[in-house]
Amino acid sequence: MDIKQLIGETTDYDKKLALEEKKPKSWCKGISAFANCFGGKLIFGVSNDSELVGLVDAEGDAEKISEAIKIHLNPIPEFRLSFEKDEDKTFVIVEVLKGQQTPYYYEGDGQLIAFMRIGNESVPATPSQLRELVLRGSGESYDSLKSRYDFGNMSFTKLKSVYKQRTGNTFEDTDYESFGLIDEKGNLTNAGALLADESPVRHSRLFCTRWNGLSKASGIVDALDDKEYTGSLVTLLQDGTDFVRNNSKKAWRKVGNGRIEMPDYPDRAVLEGVVNALIHRNYMEIGSEVHIDMFDDRIEIYSPGGMVSGISLEGKDLLKIPSKRRNPILADIFSRLKYMERRGSGFKKILADYEGQVEFDESKMPVFDADNDDFTLTLYNLNYEHDYVMSVNDTMNGTQGGTQDGTQGGTQDKLQKQIFDMIEENPQISTSEIATKLGVGVRTVKRRIKQMPNISYVGSGYSGHWEIKGE
Image 1: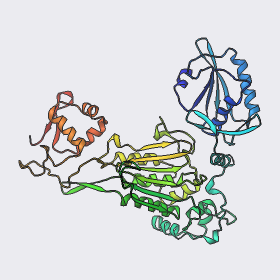
Image 2 (image 1 turned 30 degrees about the vertical axis):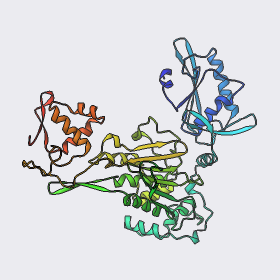
Image 3 (image 1 turned 90 degrees about the vertical axis):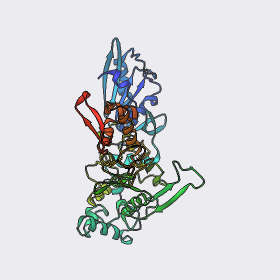
């Protein structure tokens, strides 16, 4: 391990200039936070401004660190001590593994506190986070717990109907227990309460708003449409996706004997976003609901509760983040309904759905933002600030019909118009040069050029050039 590589990280490590024997809480809280979240490293011998100072008595400090952890952490998390050198300086690194017996408390000075990792700080867990840690440590989940509602008072006609429609199978009475809607004693679980037709879980609601403009206060009229939905999670999913569809547009472009449809938002991406918000939210957060906020240029889908693993998404490769389920029973039922997959590939599907759209470019890439408390997905309107024509001439016939501003094939979207102008001005320009000037990726440029049948590349490599048909 290279000590200098660790210093460049943000949330996976903490640093201390020296061991504060008389103030164990100052660094033991980091041990608690790492064990309660996703693990991490505590480095002794590094200043707050990342200067490599080293320890005078590294071996002696290591013994004291080990002893303090055993005294002040309850239960004692799994950790490893190691020494690292940089020239003549020695450092002690405490590697804390993600704990399985959460919550891990700091115990001292008459206090018993469980800490969580928020960004690069260790802070006391909120009541909701503490309840979630207790469940995780006991091997249970919120949706598996017995609810305070009577199964006999609930109906599940919506769930049964959708199950039949999407699988072709009939929902049997034995499925209530096998699916986890009731426990072995016939008690209604929280999962069952959330999926009942008239769900009694008051904070299981969905708020949808179509705002007027680019923010929540853009003009005299703040909202163009707003709805509050209650009921089964299956109903909430359908209501949420319907709201987005009803407040969206679908442009189209005529090509040949057919046409290409270009929705504001890809249906699959919206479905995945709403499913994830409803299924993976933290239902122990009372007084907080899932929100779908639509603006002119984007949709923001918010759900209470961050990533289950506690990690921040900042700087992470979304395609390499392991899938973790906060509510495994709900996730299993929705996978049976074919709304999601058991292996957890929601991020990948949303990104792939966007990248497969005709009007996509990197500036419209979906954004995922999460911390310990919240998760927000931003989906960008693919048609925002684009002017699409409804018919396109496939050939130039010397007439003005189907042309605008001297370009062939009808009105192009803004990006295609810019590409066309650059090629017209410099037929030797490369796709990488175009991408750099426009601030988009090379793949985006190549994809757009393929949609412009009047442009072709003649020759090969650097010796070739672009030709515009009809000129």
